[in-house]
Length: 142
Image (cartoon, rainbow, N blue to C red):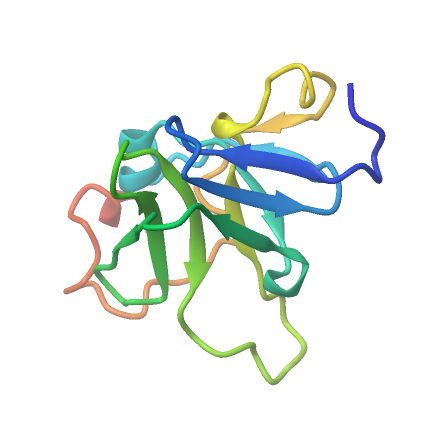
């Protein structure tokens, strides 16, 4: 197991892209929204300023963006592994949380062995800004 202050490395299957965060996450969230269930993602949350992304030469990170266009899901163009989601909106001016999600499914599971797991709808419950842009299966949550 990693020390709580040991940097954590999360790499795609082909190792072209690596995301490095400074410590273990507070918890791992198995988000239950429609996209995260389909990705099978298990998110650890960090402030974007804490995150370092390394790529090998010619590595390409692709994005999937839809709905309210609040976040991008980022994946390796070579192997297809979803690595992280990233906020597309500027930080809130009211001091609210500003986070990105690291897909901890790409981390050595032994490192995360003692991190608590949660099964929540999202990292923060927010009202839908637009029902027209929400996935129909997510509308049942509201």
